[in-house]
Image 1 (cartoon, one colour):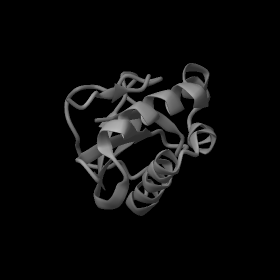
Image 2: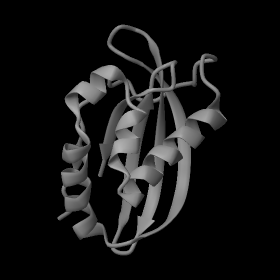
Image 3: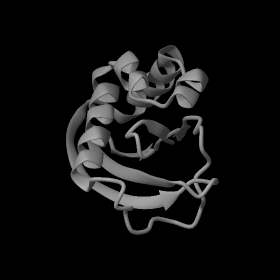
Image 4: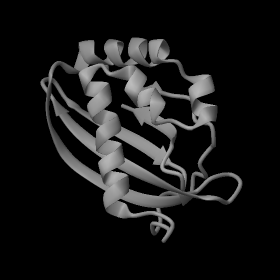
Length: 131
């Protein structure tokens, strides 16, 4: 059974599902940043991934914690093969601020992994979830 990894989110996103992306975001830039973050995870470059995060999330998540969780997941997924898809939706955080959520699906040797990477308007990662 694949363990789900829930990384602390500095801003709890409202559970109303994805909507239209705010004009505060460039969809191509969100996709590129999300793929860069997942590239770091796949390559084991955890410090680089954490460096993309907001101050609040950096305070809650160390590269060591991220490494331990991703490495545990990698034992179940096998080697990375390719990205299958990247989609972007808009959401609001609990304060009503716009954020963008990229959903990146990666194909691995034994299964697919879905990464949800949330960004604030400064393009800092404010949430990271994998399963």
